[in-house]
Length: 258
Image 1 (tube, rainbow, N blue to C red):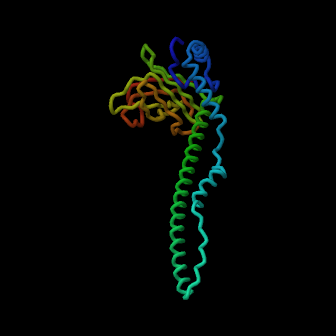
Image 2: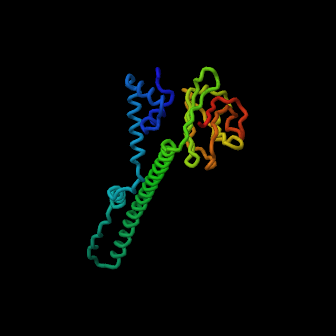
Image 3: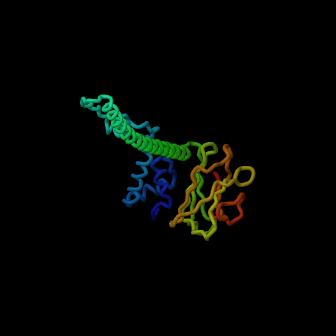
């Protein structure tokens, strides 16, 4: 490997121990003289460790709940002083009761506002917890596809003489599909790349459309596919934006399942 790896995902695969053969040896040889790639590998190992050690998020701690509830208790009710004796005690009692009611109404109003703020804060915490759970579940699903012993690994290359564009498909008929592409040429307006699963029998199955970034890199992660379909090959074609039911455009990448 004279240059940097085509796929940044190779660092993650190496960290997970799933990069094999010549690719593994080439990356190890390149790492000895490239501090930048060695740093990327350390980052990949960190990501792998975080996913491996990820646990379901716990509810907020009692300290967090107490801090939120203190907002409600910030303005305690003060006991009312006894009215000074007067010639007409009932008159003064009525006035004192009216004043106490006004003070109580003000305090209750402030407390209602603070309770509303507390409710919004709790909703924000719950939304963050659910988002973290979803991200952790997705990371675990991708990890299961990459590390399952019966996942097939397919390298897709350009049909041209100079095979610059490349793709890698990791497919498990029950767990799903993870696909990465590199060095893809830019697309004309209104066009998309479309990934296809070519089954052992039947018509190609769309695995989703994607747009490459400025460096020609693209990815399709866990697209909705029918379970239990054995794959014969994978291909990438150029299609109208949004994709088509069956491939119509030129094949940019193709790879057979070995």
